[in-house]
Image (cartoon, rainbow, N blue to C red):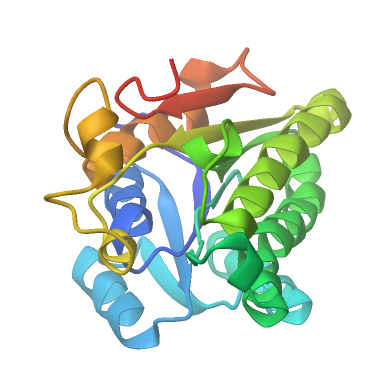
Length: 244
């Protein structure tokens, strides 16, 4: 316990799924945590459950002004920002030829632009603090091709690239930037697209099962903590061996 003592973390998509698991784990490890999400009711309930060291803020990650407000609220409430987990994301499946521009742009806005805006918003407070850790949740789809998910794959490859670019540029300020690449994770978002019992990705995963949100959160905790102090620019698969 106490692996994040004294740190302030902001987790996007923090109201449910992987984000909720990260919020709970970070708070248990001593961090003050901002759970940021568009799901106000469940986000506020989570913050109420976890106590004074967890705060909910409404955040549409594709909205530049909303990012500025969320970071300002974080600084006002907790006095700094040491860790950012860019977890919020959406998916969409369609054959390439049938994929609409509107759906493509919607996925890019959340998964790619949202990560860019979050990374940029975190730089000033982290520089002021003398450093920090940015953890970007990419995907196995950001390391290898995924058919029927062109927008999702494009957005997650972009997160991989932004992670590398940010790591190179921000290292001089003590800001580390790493990405996590989950495989099939048992979250509410998964259920929108897959039959978990009969999904081909599960069958072809060497470990033959889905990950739990907590298994992804444990890796995010390591990258957020000082235990990973010499890691930056790493792309970490957490996928049961599917990208081997």
